[in-house]
Amino acid sequence: MKIMIKMKKHLLILAGTAIIFGCGQEKSKTTGWNYNDPKHGGFEVSTNFAEQNTPPGMVFVEGGSFTMGRVEQDVRYDWNNIPKGVTVSSFYLDETEVRNVDYLEYLFWLERVYGSNYDNGSYPEVYWNALPDTNVWRDKLAFNEPLVEHYLRHPAYHQYPVVGISWEQAVDYCAWRTDRVNERILIDNGYLWEDPDQVDENVFTTESYLMGQYEGRIRRMLPNLKQGVHNYNKKAGRDREAVRIVQERDGILFPAFRLPTEAEWEYAALGLVNNTEEENIDERRLYPWDGDGVRNAANKNKGEIVANFKRGRGDNMGIASKLNDNADIPAPTRTYWPNGFGLYNMAGNVSEWVMDVYRPLVDQTTTDLNPYRGNVYQTWSRDEDRFLIEKDSLGRIIKENVSHANDKNLWKRRNYSNSNNINFLDGDYDSRLSNDWGKDENINEFGETKENIVSGEIVINDNTQVQIRPEKEGYLSNKDRNNQNSFELDKNTLEVYDYGKTSLVTDNSKVYKGGSWNDRAYWMVPGTRRFLDQSLSTATIGFRCAMDRLGPPTSQLKENQRKPVDWERKKGY
Image (cartoon, rainbow, N blue to C red; front, top):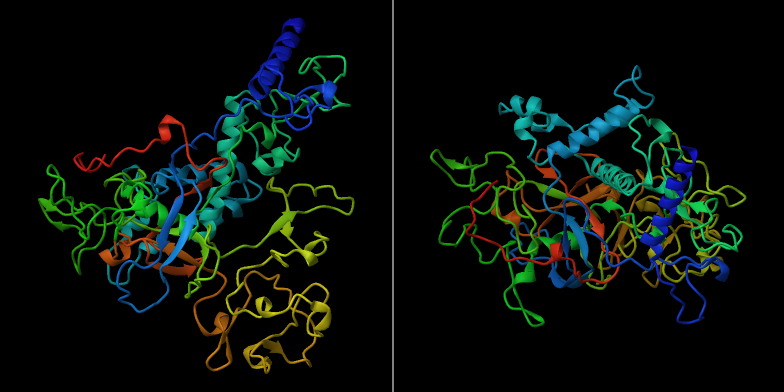
């Protein structure tokens, strides 16, 4: 029996060798040394990887160039979406908004692992913090208590988009989904055993697994071909003692789920992929469909409303026997027709969170490839011996903002000089300063500006540059995420405005896109944009997840080949 178990384990390791490294011996085209050969040093290369698979529930969005911003009249005179030509890399996006049933699965897992109170778990606050705010349905002059009580959990609403979710909760859901999808991949491929009893710091997270800090039930390992580990006299994979866990270089695990950037969401919503001829877009779009109307033009469904929105005051769904959009509140996530990329409800139903920090002005000179505002660079936390710090009590690897303490070359980098770049080129003080910090007495060796800065303490010198009065002492490091102020220079009056105190726009203001069931058609134009504090939620905002596309921008997989929108099919499920 023991011989059979050992033989089975040995065969599993050999199978893993064939799957990852292939059967043939490949050589480096630049050095001539063999890949995946312990006698040649054991440099491991995945020679069988063909293309990134499509994540579950997602659609491949082939990237390209488009005009981002206003295509409709700026009737509100916000002037916050000036048209700008940008390029978006290929990526993946959820086919629909995240549904109630999807979020309930998340809540169930959190309750099972961390508990819902201190009698059945160690960290119930994790579960409490993830709960949607169902009270967002309440209106002082409306009877919405049935929605407060039933919309999230009743099976009648399982296929409806989840609402009452803040930006912060949406980000946490994306992180959880990353770990659950990758854990399932490892289980299905035989690398892990299912472990429903894992709790607290012993839960699977992708990062803790890759960093060697996951202590769960390992089923099998991959061969480690590194010289000094693998027996020199044995063929690759024949040394049963030389093993390792799955790594990123094996191409098995998915990259992280996340919220889409504003540029990605707007590009995907327009779905211009069906309106191209050669290298040109032959017809621009106002909405995610052709034309300037909101009704289906196909013969079989002529006149049908193509999205869930509010047609006018007191008209959420039309009249009985002929409901126009057939929804007074959010509709099931596949109720209407998809756009050119196969994405549902990119106009109407619910608005959606995106990653970006909101700023009212769109600078034409900023990056035109994958534009995004909100970068805060982080790195792994390490001890004084450069070893990773032990994971936290929730099983997560600890990170910290990039600083001169953990990046010795930060002072000479040309592309960034600090971790927090939310306010870069936004009239803030730091991005107007010279990098020659040693010549400015108001800046220390870390490029940190003096603390206790308020509008009255900032002056403009003869060259119209922002400066701080020299008598102020101490330094401002901007480490407090919730108490950061951004300053903007008005070149006409040479005054500096502290937007964190004089307006609702702060570093915690996040963009949300698209119209909702309670909005007029104007907000269904993908170029429109609004903002809300990242800790707040409403009954009209949901979200969907995105994922990076690794490798070439085009896909050869059959499932990723585009199909024309069938406007003749019946609306709904």
